[in-house]
Structures are given as C-alpha cells and as structure tokens.
Length: 391
Image 1 (tube, rainbow, N blue to C red):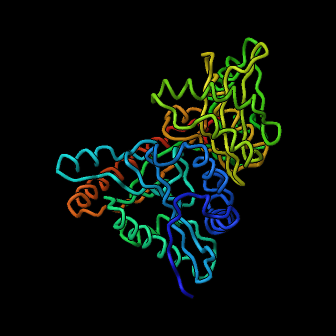
Image 2 (cartoon, one colour; image 1 turned 45 degrees about the horizontal axis):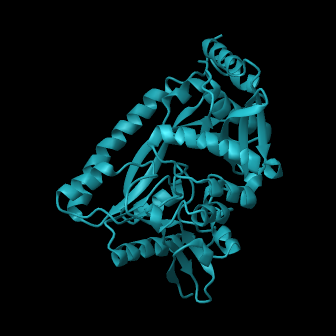
Image 3 (cartoon, rainbow, N blue to C red; image 1 turned 30 degrees about the horizontal axis):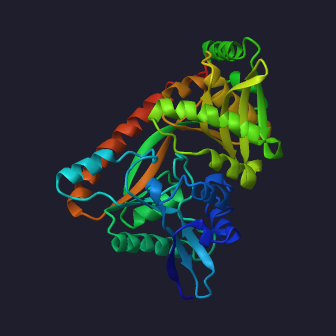
C-alpha cells in the first residue's frame, strides 16, 4: 500500500463521512466511542462561524493520511498558531523565554480542539492492523509540516493514552496537569450518589441545591430538536457575560451555537435556569456515548450556589439518568472536589525543534510532572466520600 500525507486547510475540503470514519468509533475514541469535539460537525462549526481561521490566529492545517486511492486512513486536527490563547495548556513562559533569547516561538503547530480542554483522540485512526503505522505517518507528517511552515514546535494537548504513547515513542516530551471529573459508580439516583459521601458533605450539598433553587428558580434540560434559537439567544447572553468578566474576549460567537444546533443538536444538552418566566442562567454540555462534557456557563442573576447546581449537580443528575460513566466539568476548579468530583491527570505532548529550548523545557517538565502527581495524590485523599469505617 502506498501512503501519502496531505494538508487540508479547512474541513470544507474533507467529506464529513470520511473524517468521522476516522474520528468516531472504535480506535480513535477508546475513552469514549463518540467524542463530540472531534466530529466534523463540531470542528467545521468552529471554522464556518469564523471562530477559527487566520483572523483569529487559528489557521486550520489538518493532516490527512491517505492510501493510493486517496481514501483517508487517518487524520489529525491541527492549527497553525500565532499566539497561545484558547489552549488551556499554558506555554506563555516558554514563548517569553525563547523570545528573550532571540528566537521566534510563533508560529507553532497546535494539535487540539480549539477552546476545549477535553481529553480525546487527536491521532484519528480507526482500529486495524496498520493503525500503529498510520499514527507514525501522521506524526511524521506533522514534523514535515513544522519544517515547511517554519514553526518552532508541535503541541498535542489533552491526549488519551494511545495517542500519548504514540507521541512519546516518537520523542515528544510529556506534560501533565489535572482536572476534576465525576465518576458514575453504578448510581441509580442522585440520592444514591449522596449516600456514598460523608454525612457532613451530604448535608452541605443538599443545602446548596435547596438554596440554588429558592425563590422559584426551576431547571430545564433542553436537547435535540427542542433547542430553539430563543434558547441560543438566552444562552449566548449568559456566555458573553461570563466570558467578558473572565478573560475579556469570549472565543465563541453567536453563529457557532446556531451551527452546532443545526448539525449536532442531539449531542447538545442545555441546562437552563428560569425564574419568573425568564431564563437567568444556563450551561452547555456535549453528550458522548459514555461521558457528559460540561463546557460553558453564564448567568444574568448572581444567586448563591446556582453555578454549582446548573454546572455540576444537574450534570450528575443527567449522567445518572442516561447511564453515562463520567462527567467532565472542564479545566481547573478545586472547589469541584467537595462536590464529588475526583482529581484526574491530563496529559499533552510537545516537540520542540531548537535543541536548547527543548532541553530547558524537558528539565522543567520533569519537575512539573512530579509536582502534579504529588498534588493529585493529596487531593485524592481529600474527596468527600465516606471512609469504610464511617457510619
């Protein structure tokens, strides 16, 4: 079989069925057979809405591995970056140090889902006898692209284990961080989950839920064809308010939400809070085959514990009702620990062309991984779950 590697400067050049045959299902999505963020629908919505593109500093340069008939055997969502915003794996200090030393850190190549700190497949290769070989071709293609465009480095972020192993075998440097996820240990109801917690923690969560829903606040789950443009209008107002306060310029525009509503509504869950006939807060989640992925939230009324209710507790309720294995509630947030979410290590891989910068980063990452591991172990001891000898 003849193998060739091509670059697609946007998903308009890639049929959705061909991309999804690589991205979804056994092989690429071993952690979750349907990871919605690497679907053609999600990634093309980012491009078609203008959230991703040259003007935003995220230029698509997707890597395609093909056979002699131009059948796509594997793919890599990749972007040429002129900055380090919207990645959630922070390398600003590397860029600053390299610039002070006289180097040019940008452009760089980013293998990721833009604005999305969610672990999932990045080397999109279905199961098969040649899967390992195709991954190697994809990584070789990334390195050839780096040389062609004069990029300083390649950064593959939020990797599942098979991709992490593949990048590591090719000499990429490993970086670890942590998030907090909720695990469904076979619970049949939210009360069943609460029963696994220490008494003091159960009481605290019940009080938070009661206070969040005081004064006539009600919660709606909206998904699939029930999502209307009015829902998106309300949610976008919440998103813009939170984004403007947190980082100054939200990454996603209004058109993006309409597009995912058209293309993948059955994979979208809006949790909307209403009081006195109008929506006052909401959170968007994407639904995998095994996991619920919490992404963005916002509100126009600041109410005690409403954030916890809309983002965390309602996500747990939905996951239990759907029989999902896990809730991933985004980056950072040690406050999630007290609400039944557990520390989880996330990993990325980095390939740096300049030997001097590579050595410095490698030394730094060795120390950072040790710190992250120790901190995760300490946090795991602080979960709210009952000890075996506790009544």
